[in-house]
Amino acid sequence: AQKVTQAQTEISVVEKEDVTLDCVYETRDTTYYLFWYKQPPSGELVFLIRRNSFDEQNEISGRYSWNFQKSTSSFNFTITASQVVDSAVYFCALSEAGGGATNKLIFGTGTLLAVQP
Amino acid sequence: DVKVTQSSRYLVKRTGEKVFLECVQDMDHENMFWYRQDPGLGLRLIYFSYDVKMKEKGDIPEGYSVSREKKERFSLILESASTNQTSMYLCASSRGSVSGNTIYFGEGSWLTVV
Image 1 (cartoon, rainbow over the protein chains, first blue to last red):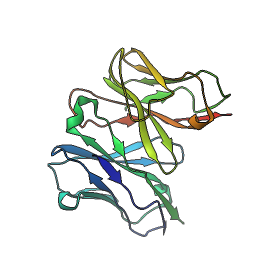
Image 2: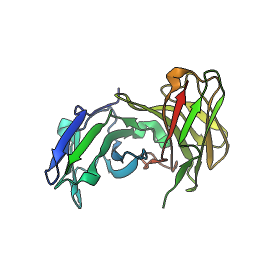
Image 3: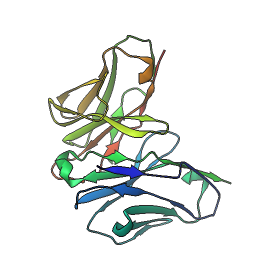
């Protein structure tokens, strides 16, 4: 069965610290897609990144980086030099190719990141 | 810019009322979704639609129905609202041609049933 686990419920850091948000997934599909979304206090889920199961290259976008490891079924997200504006709930999500073109997402329970000034 | 718009950000309804949550997307997406978000449970799929007038149940469809009469609009209906339906509701959309397409979300609707 498919599942996404974000074991960290809440993380609190001080500005400029680096922080890593963990995501572990379960799926039987060989083709799947992983996503990270950010949900600021306003409520909207903002898309951050999409990764397919055949691309294990790590990705960096500014202060954000993602580490995808199929061997451990993990897709971790690191924020370097965190800022107060990074405070939000972050969701990891999985979409299986076996789900067809309907692209249903299975979400983790989210990690609340609080960055203190 | 992609845009998913939910008509109401905050609603307060009474138990037993019929409630409509409206969602419009301007990206010509085939797929549309309604999720419910509750603390500690993440987002759970209520219903989705992959075409006009087509719908499929998600993980928690009980107590809800949906309507998709036009491609850009997807409505969530609570036939008789109950207090356990107090929650944040998120609408989303994606292209439907292949799997794994990015899903884009609206700002959410906070519903309180009293």
